[in-house]
Length: 389
Image 1 (tube, one colour):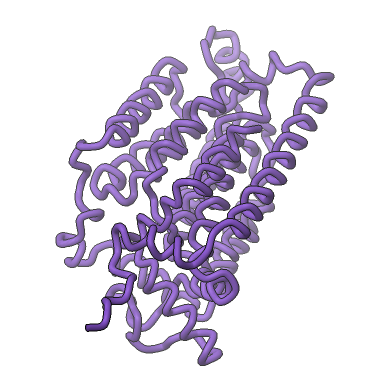
Image 2 (cartoon, rainbow, N blue to C red; image 1 turned 120 degrees about the horizontal axis):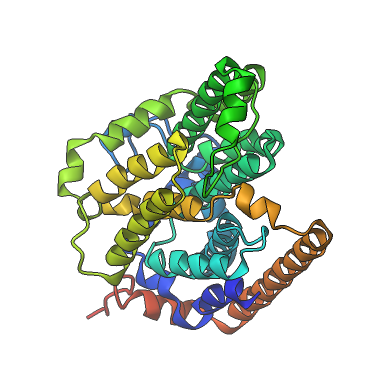
């Protein structure tokens, strides 16, 4: 699927990652990773910290170490390579989130293209990992609702284990999971309180759209919540990362950071996000959906994203998840005999796109040298040494 690898392959020619090094604290993450490798321990003081409110915590320590290791071997090529990998992963997870494996191929293609274009200006930083992890989490939640099973959610503890060691914004994912489990438990309790006669009467009413929701027992929900919560504590700073997240989220310094302010609507991407959010609310209305999870998810992500433009990816992913949300109407039209071959074709296409991505990365590794990379980065960042008199 060229959709998944074309945006990544464009990086071999554009090298846009080197034009964005003045954003995303690229050098801060690199220096922190080099310091961890040199001292063989994570920092416990305020050296190289992005915000004083972090109180010595480095929530991105694993990302920083991986970047430092790659930089030692590839130099400045590390950043184009990472951006290529991030863009391929973004195209893949948004295609899955938009229902690419459920037969809604063209809808998934369109929403994936919109996501890749809207987030094309994001620099290479841990925030890209949070975008990918949240999209993967929402995909698993949609799959759980589609299958009326908690089995897809068994992947979540492993996801949160990696996420908590890569970026502090894993707290968003914990909030989404808590909302999903709470709504599921309340729905299960309300269903048990309804008599059989009332359910038969309600089933005779004509509904244009009927949603399936995951059948999660209180015991399963408790075990899942405990496993995911415990996974987020398996990091060098344990529960202190939660304090670091809320401290940076409410810091007074955000008033002086451009990306922490509301969108100025000077870019097409801002209007696309607003339009996609409006369409998602319209879809909920047309379906006559009363699902509290999707309503609160979309409204909550919208409030955060429209308050701070660097969090615009939240409402973007939430809108895609709502628009492509599965229901009984889609399940009834699926052909079981065609479902398995279609998924196999999609998996084969994904493997082919990943192979093409690796070839593109190999081409970039052989054709670029450090002098040309420095010249490219020097267009937006003072990386060249001044000439000696």
